[in-house]
Image (cartoon, rainbow, N blue to C red; front, side, top):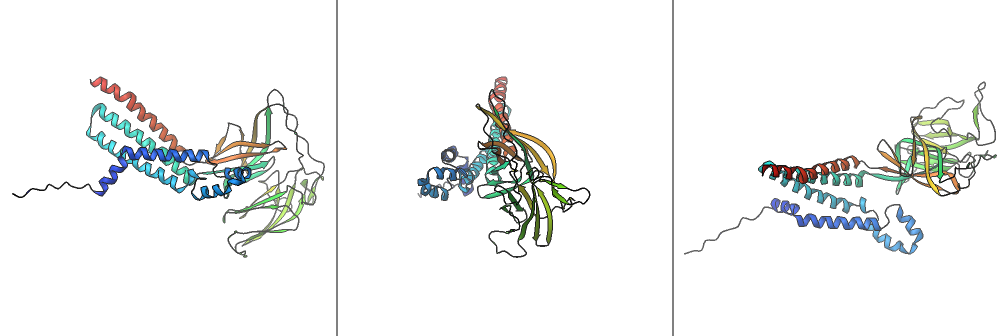
Length: 412
């Protein structure tokens, strides 16, 4: 009698993969690895912090070169961390699909419990999706400026990013405990009539090519703005030259001629010539009124392909720090769009403000120059999805912990 061989059907490849992603051990292993990566990202300096750390510890440059190649100095933006979050998301999605199948087969409180568990899994998916979006498309940088200056971009680790609007620093204040602030100094009596003063800067941006440059203001010196990785040609470059500097700008109402009311830098302005591909123009730029650009004679000029900002310290002398412990410091800002102030906002420590997807945090000041401040800029498009995930998590936990047991007791 021949023995009968019973063949055990082998699991399909899809079933094996599905079982792996639905495995609790696999999910726990991923959680441990992600947690370890988060610990590394919290302990090691990240991003712009690396340069400051190496200045204090130059002997660590060799180690951090290796860390940089492994992505350990950019943990939360590295490809392998995004991959871990993506794999964990697939695992959670697989578990959610199985919870949905369970909910379809059951009734009563068991179905409610399965739906609550599935909602909790979906909330984790939302939170993970928000983290992935932040890592891939989020932005973080800094803006540094003095009173009277306007910036339409912020500095990141590898260059700069444009803002869809401009920020004008109208006033910076430091508050102390138990004592009112003293005046922070007065305007200097002298001006840089030649336009070659230290601290006078001309920031030129070409948004189409994503190129920006920071030039010192010097009369008659021609500057070239072009992409760094391309040879300079007439088709891919702009030539910018400062032709005149006026410390206290005004226009004679009869002759329409530009003149200076005094030698003090009360309203500094520069007259700039721009020549580039298919474009040629002359305009006045004002340090205190960056959105007000004019032609000779004072008539407004049309917007061109370049964005230019004239930065001047305006003769402000450094002021002494106010006495007493620092309570807070804050910046009074004006949001400028299309040359017009559309909103006034104040940002201070622990009180940021958000506008058009960008959040601004008050971060620093300079004890030697109380007109200077710095803001941190954060753009995180994943925040709404993360908040939605937290809301779903609360709903799921409420269903599992409160609703389902009450239904079970009622049925019993």
